[in-house]
Image 1 (cartoon, rainbow, N blue to C red):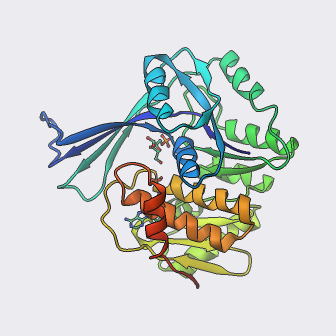
Image 2: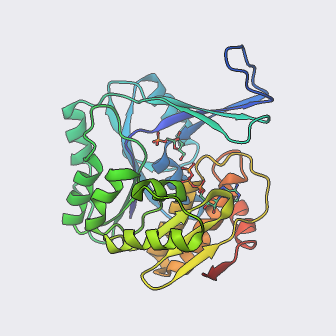
Length: 306
Ligand SMILES: Nc1ncnc2c1ncn2[C@@H]1O[C@H](COP(=O)(O)OP(=O)(O)OP(=O)(O)O)[C@@H](O)[C@H]1O
Ligand SMILES: O=P(O)(O)OC[C@@]1(O)O[C@H](CO)[C@@H](O)[C@@H]1O
C-alpha cells in the first residue's frame, strides 16, 4: 500500500484575475476551492492511475471539515488525525497580466503533543512492501526533524519512503535511502549553493544526492521538462507543448506518477515517462490532472539519454 503524508493540508483557493493590483480591490473572473496539500495531490494522481493509496495528515476545525468534504468527491481512502486548530487556506492567484502564479500559503494549525503522538500511532501498521510519500511544509511547533523521525520509524518497520522537501530536511533523510527525491533545479542549486549553466552541471549535482543515499533522483525543471539521474546514466523528459493553466501541483503529480508506477513495474524509465506526463498534464489543467489528460500528454513526451 502507498501512504501519502500531508502534515499540513490546505483548502486551495484558486483565483483567476485579469490583472492583480496590490493595494486595491481586485475582483476574480473565476475562483474555485480545491482540497490541497502536496501529499493530497499525490494521492489524487495515484487515484487517476488506479493505484490505491491512503492519505494521512492533520486536519482540524471548520476549514478541516470543508477540506474533508471537498476531498470526499475524489473517493480517496483517508485516515486523518483530527486536531483542534483550523486547517489552513492557501491562496493561489493566476492573473493573466502576470507570468507566474502568486501563492500565499497559510501557516496551518499548531499541533499538540497528544495530537502528534496519535498521528505517529497511526503509522504503526505500515511495513514491508509499503511506501510512504511525505511532502509539504510542517505545521507550527513540529520539530524540523519530524520527517526524519517518521522516515526512521517506518524504515525500521520495513517500509520504503519518498520525501519531497528541500534544504537540510531533505539532506538529513538521504542516508536512509529514500526511494526517490525530486527537487526542482532551483532547489538543487540552493542545496549546494551553486548556479547551473547547463543540464550536465545539474546532472553532476543530482548525482551527489545519489552518492548521499537517494535511490532515484528526479530533477523537475517546469517548462524545460525533467531529468532522471541514476548512478551511471541520465535521461531527459521534454516538456510537451501545451497551454499552461495552473502548474500548482505539477511536482506532486510527477512524484505520484514515478513512485506509483515504480511500485508496480520496478522500471525507472517508464516510471519517469509517466511521472513527466502527470506533471505536464497537471500544468495544463485547472486542477490536478485527470487520466485522459495524462494519457494524451504521455504520447507527446519522449525520454532521451543525455
Ligand atoms: N509549463 C510547463 N510546461 C510543460 N510541463 C510542465 C510545465 N510546468 C511543469 N511541467 C511538468 O511538471 C514537472 C514538475 O513541475 P515543476 O518543475 O514546476 O515542479 P515543482 O517545482 O516541484 O512544482 P510544484 O512544487 O509547484 O508542484 C516538470 O518537470 C514538467 O515535466
Ligand atoms: O506549504 P507547502 O506544504 O509547501 O505547499 C502547499 C501547496 O502549495 O502545495 C501544493 C502544490 O504543490 C498545493 O496544493 C498546496 O497549497
